Length: 312
Length: 259
Image (cartoon, rainbow over all chains, first blue to last red):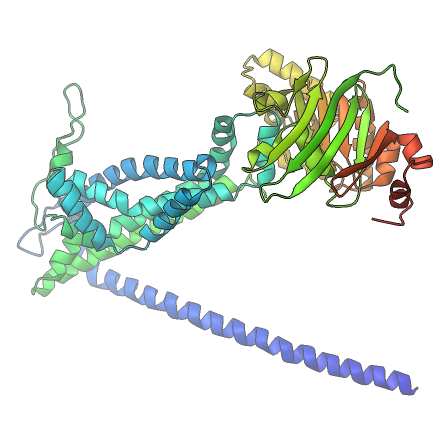
């Protein structure tokens, strides 16, 4: 009898202890939720304010008009076209170079002090303030290589800026592939390139694509390096069209054209005393955020879509 | 001892192996693999049996700093597969491998089996279809998958996936097939299927299997080698090893006094 009583008492103690310990679970969940909300709500409020402020300018005209001295008529045409062209150059330089560099570092490079050094430097580059890239580009592209204050210079600068992001995400995507899959491929007699092309690249391109899109979204919003290399702030013409009606149908003059991009246009409008221009700035900001969110959403969707058939 | 009428397919001669950290994982191993026979490697964890198996298809070459010493000679051509002048890819085309955990590619069943052929540059669809069918039949999987060859391999059960991996290793007509604890991730029924399959495959090729399961070695193999701490303690007919081992250490391991 006495034995039984002590067991019951013990059980009561154990239950009290479990209850006590579980209190910490609840506490942490509450704190975590609070922190999450703090960030999210602040962001939502900012976004909402941009939309509310810029609302009067939400129309197609805003996208088809050049900037103007009169706020009511000013539009984003030169800025969004500039952004698209700069992004194109950024994409065409950062993606092949970054993906190839990531593949090489992960699959081909010997592991020694030199590749360690490269690895540390790539990781550090991802954290370098963007204005430093702007200064580098001003010296290298604008003055030394004489590319001018052009779309080419801006695209290359942003390409450099997101190169570490592309390299790091490529390497991470590759590293997620289990050793057993590589060994299986080598085991049937595949060469290194066959393993890389048939397996490593095919199973990791979802992750690589995600990194590229996130890098591009970052480049889209960058202002500092573009200002440093000397983008124009008031521009009422479009660069020459890349596609022409006469052979060879392609024209590369646009690369050396002056330009502006959306964040710079926004910055310019925001710095004017006339409040009417602030509405334009808010509308531009809202547009940049929407495009960025769409790009990030596309990245998540693509990753889900591509990873769906891969389980490890 | 070994039946003198069977030919030797491959033999290790005074094989030493060093990992990149300098650890000597194999110590002077000499041992034959008889043609169309199953040889089992047994021993406690860490004794070097998987390390030894992975020497045969130069798997250690994938990781820098590993070093082989000694020879593994294949017959009848007397090629030392460990020779630096022999391309590991050539070795892997002759000696295929089935791994511990089923590791199909995230591709279709068909593409998994066909991959070894694609690597060899085979593009003819007729030949490919025939080879895939033959390999899947050889791996006793054909009847279960013939109507869904283009389904994803991940949709198969664990045992089916392992048979798919056997089919993939079989499709390229290897001379030797290595099995690295092929049933350790499988349930008893799937294990029995794989064991039965290994015995059937013996007529086509030479098998070397690492197993932590002594009953499995006793059930399927013709010859058994007991390894301990990187050394080959005893090698003999499986019947002899399990009924009348020559060494005290072997007996202790087999009877469960050790390991």
